Length: 319
Image (cartoon, rainbow, N blue to C red; front, side):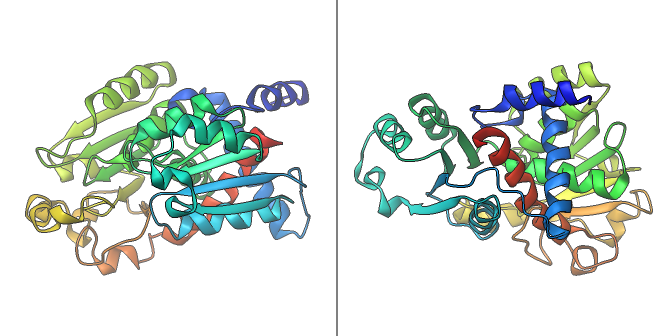
């Protein structure tokens, strides 16, 4: 992009919410990825970039986390700002305070709010009530920060995004929803293999297909893992029972028995495929140890990029 276009893009993002990739244009998503790569290079070169000096991010956690908490907290520190960890028990939300009231109050103190929660409606209501940017750290419907970091990682490893094939094997959960939308926006071909009863949300699938027609991407939903993974550049999976669905673990183990990413299945992907997992992982369940710890695995590269991608989001929205 030219300097003028970059300035226009930066101006258009300032003050926005980051609730899902569906709300961002392909150009805006690519801008955030490029910004993340630039911030990563500067950090590793010892060049301090602190556009959020003196600013504070409130981090609401209704769901526990490793990567989300550490990456946002460290990211704010590196950007010159400060992050406040707020569990549900630390807020009046835990005693039934209205989300809109919480949003308006916190907006008087903070420069941005990140929330990791269950119901996607909570994030929407928080954004409606807040006058500062709200960032979706995860809901039961989507995980846009992870998807942004994932596509940053693929770009770094493959040198491009458009035209690549990404195969997702497993539960049609929040992770696959964000990956589907990201693929559609960035021109990738995505194939999803899930057992009956565990498909991605039909509305998200329909929206992803509509966006893919504008970028040259595509979306395939299938029951056959071999069909999904055939000639894939990227192979992705997630736990069979996400947080909040632990009671279904045994039931899901039966339903997903044929959907493990293992050496036999991976033979159908391209030889130089990348294996990805958003973590935490259960070796021996959704993925074999030989795959997740093998030479094609880039799980810790994508985990690291949560830091850089989220720094880009915070810098763009709160800077």
